[in-house]
Image (cartoon, rainbow, N blue to C red; front, top):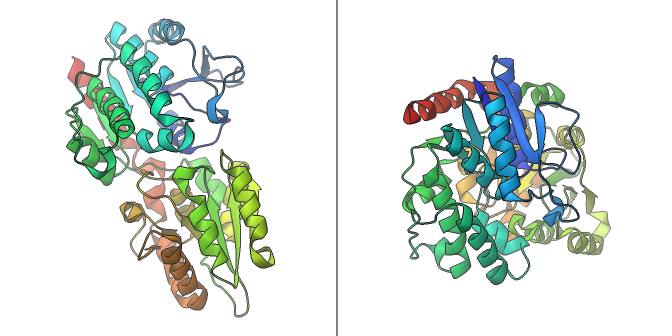
Length: 405
C-alpha cells in the first residue's frame, strides 16, 4: 500500500505530531508499505520520501515553517499523489497543508484518514496573539477551503463556552466530518469529538514508538533512589501556556530535596528561565530544546517524569518515551491516566501546584513506591511499541479504502 502522510509540522522541528508520523512511517515501511511525507520545510529534505510543500518565506509562527499558498500546495499534492499512485492520504493537522491534502485527495478519489492529535482550541488560545481576532481569521481562511456546514457544536460543554473555543471546535469537527475515517489516540478525546457531532467512523488507536527509539532507549533499569540521594525529576515538552510549565515550577519550589530538569522550548522560555533562576539552591535547570537522543538519555537518568498540562493533551509521546525507559510518570490531568500503564504512574489529587507538590513529596519520601512504579512501567513496555499497533493502523486504511469503493 502507498500512503501519503500530510502534515503542517515535521522534522527537524520537535513535537508529538512529528514523532508520531516518524513512528508510523518507519513501522509501515518495515512491513513493506511505501510512505511519503508531505510538509512545509525550511529547506528541502535529504530524505527523498519527505517532500517539501510550498512554504512561506520569513513567516514561521511559533518557529514552525508555514504552508503557503494553500492553492499551490493543493496543486502540487494532486500532482504528486497521482504520480506516486497513492492509495490513502493520512492527514495529521488542521492548517493549510492538511486542507491541501483533503483537496488533492478528493480530486483524485483517494480516501482520507484524519488523525486528531490534540486540542486546537486550547493551543490557539494559549499561543496566538489576540486570539479573539486571530482565531476568527484562521477559521475564516479554513472555511474558505472547507465547508463548516457539518459542524454543529454544543455550546453547553465546559470547553465550548467561549466564542473562540466554539470557533476552533467547529474547525476540528468539520475537518473530521470531511474525512473517511478518524483516528484518535485516546478515548477521552474521541468522546469529546463524538459529543460535538463528529459522525465519521472513529477508531481509538494508541500512538507508539518506532523500533529505533526503543533501541535508543536501551534496556530499561528499575529506578532506585539510594538513601541521601535527591529525587531527580524531569519535565519535557513545549514551553507554552497550555502545557502549564508554571505549575511545575511552583510545585518544585515547594519541595526541597529534589533536583529538577526541564527540556523544551517555546513562547514561555524566557519566563520559565527567569522563574527557574529564582528558585532556591539551584533546584531546577532549564536545558532548552535538545535532540530526542538527549531526551532519552535524560530519561534514563531521571527518577520520575512530570506532565503538568490540563485539558489539552491527547496522548503525549513523551509519556510513551518515559514508559519505554522504565520511568514512572506523574500526570496532573486525570484524562491522561488512560495513557499510564497499570501501576506505572500517579495522578495528582488536584491538578494545581499543591497537588503536584504533594505527589512529588510522596515519591521523595517513599523510594519503595517509586521503585514499584518503575517496575510496572517496565512490565508494560511493549504497550508503547508502534509494531503492536501497526495492524490496527493498516485496518483503518483498509476501512477507508472500502468506504470510497
